Image 1 (cartoon, rainbow, N blue to C red):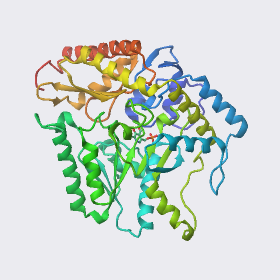
Image 2: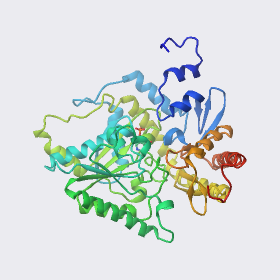
Image 3: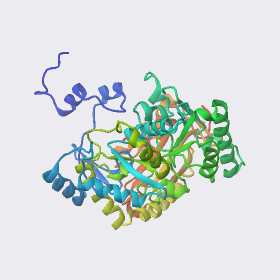
Image 4: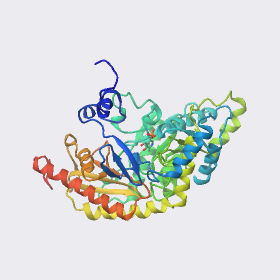
Length: 472
Ligand SMILES: Cc1ncc(COP(=O)(O)O)c(C=O)c1O
């Protein structure tokens, strides 16, 4: 059909006709069309039909301070009036970006030095990957370039970040991963840790597998390891106890750098400011995005350590310049939004609330759903929780992917007043509400989610697609 104008079309029709949606099934979308969000306040979002939903996902794990914060809106508006844009190439700077960099460097773990700004988690990971390569070239180690990530990791969708991602849906048909990228074992305790094995032993097993990979590949070719403190999109997978200590010992042994992808975990989600704090990780690079501005403006940060910075600084006089930067790096409006967001995060002590509300939400979920025959595992840290749905609890047998059970629970949630997310790998439901979530919010949310799981299970029983406690 010719393009034509959208004059006589409804918003839904125009959307289906002109809008290429990210991470969306093209066929489902053309059949079912969009759900159009119109406004949001606190922990609730409302669509154009006036349906109000508790956003248990905080958008895409990002609206940490909740919606409708006037203070952030004002900061954005004032900055837009004063200086809507100026770049930061060739030493140009602006006050919000300067203040934000100082503030971030006060917040991150010891040993970090500078922050480079971008606009998404993906670009911040690409920046870190390029900096690893740049750093090793400056050190005279041009062979030391491979990056080890983990199966089921999610680090975004750009060529570098997407290559670190370990999910088939983000690789297949896109010709990813690029060479130079490897994937070691994930930290799936529910499925991979043998019955009766301690977390410490499982951690040692995973660290051994990493070490074997480094040796097999040749340590002189391995530059960095990248990890989310708690794996998000791959299934909400917290590491076994002692994991990062053991991994860092291996990395230190072979001069392999540690990139910590804090895009979800950073800024309070786990009940600590950063996942690195929670697990005692010593990063060489950190990737920040999402909670840095709670999504009010797109901004990301690549934080480099003192050790890396020293090499960059010492080599600078002999270099023509630093050839990496985005037009919107250190965008003044984004930086102003981030500063106002961090004011709220700190003033309201939302990091502590994430710890206490997270514990309460987990307890409520355990009580409401722990015995459900389709609920295999409820896991998480702070306000980052996942529920793995299975065909058979005793054998942990997965549900038939064709039944699309988790996506159906997600859709049923809209009927029951809540948003949860179905993750792309197996049937895992993810929850990552705003860090302002109260006990009342937790209770209302769990009621809506339990009803949704019940509705979908009833449907599956009626259609004969699933029977409690039996193999399929
Ligand atoms: C851990 C992690 N890293 C990177 C990204 C990519 O961020 P963006 O979508 O802003 O590019 C995400 C997004 O969900 C993420 O969860």
